[in-house]
Figure 1: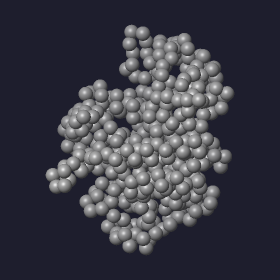
Figure 2: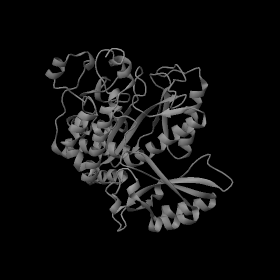
Figure 3: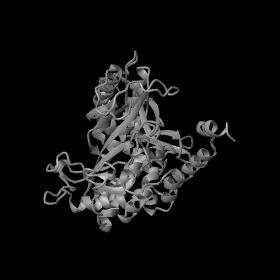
Figure 4: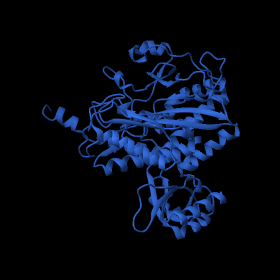
Length: 447
């Protein structure tokens, strides 16, 4: 760590960096930031920077509000195109501590670190690869699509092509490698996929990705949103997340002799995700709006919403899919968890995915048979006969599932767990009392 800090201090001096933004997130996954000058950076490494934690959502109470932000030198990156007459700008993510030097329980980065350590005790490194979708509109007040493209279309409107190109360029200059990008199913819906990385690095990258996408769009007079379902008539935006465990350089999910090329570890991990899917959904899909994407019923299968708790190889109606692009390449073996959306807190979402899978390994869960039929076309009785459950219908049901979950409470820690429960109950209560334009339009002329 000292070598990394020395590298940062030397780079800041050599590159003329005047300000360093220190980033962290609140419990809901909103990015927080403050800046220090280059002269204060060494002290920030040595002592941390104090701030009032009571002002941050989900952090400390007023009577215990003093917190310290300690920058993680390994996350240092210069922010492109942020030069002014006083020099450049860089950023680092921080870990949050109490004044007595203990990691702060409410820091989502610490929650993920703690759970990654549990995986490391079993010899595993957790790798993730999210496919993050987003919409680009004319403005937040006018959510009108800018293009009419569809899946993989090369749209005639050059502005959206240029937006993706510019976003990728900024990400890669910040050391965040991109695998590929393309137009998604809906008009003005896009996807940029980051190359797989360990979960902590990826969670930091997801936070950076969301900011870069939004800033790049804003600089072009547009508005980018990661809202799960911003338009009634269009598909929602997901964050299909590819997961794997490695033991050193060996992919613990691969078994070339297995019919599906899945090891016992991979099958038990997948079973764990399926068994605990309903109780972790309030974390992976944390907003009222998230459940406007996770819908079923007539006309909705085209939305490809992964609401049924089962797995398959070629079945995109399943909650978990085993990609078969390169079935004999051991490093590529993984599972794809399809329910999360891009508005989640990635630190907490990756944490619950990991612990659900590890629970399956520890307890020796048996993986149910593969679902080969189109689940959307099955009747409820047929699904019930095959033991196929459904994800919660709304945030209220998801919170009810989560509050009974020992696994989620242990994963998040009791304080974060209780805070999320309180926050989500309050969000549901506000939603229940809101009279929507739909209700006014439908009922006011009649009643």
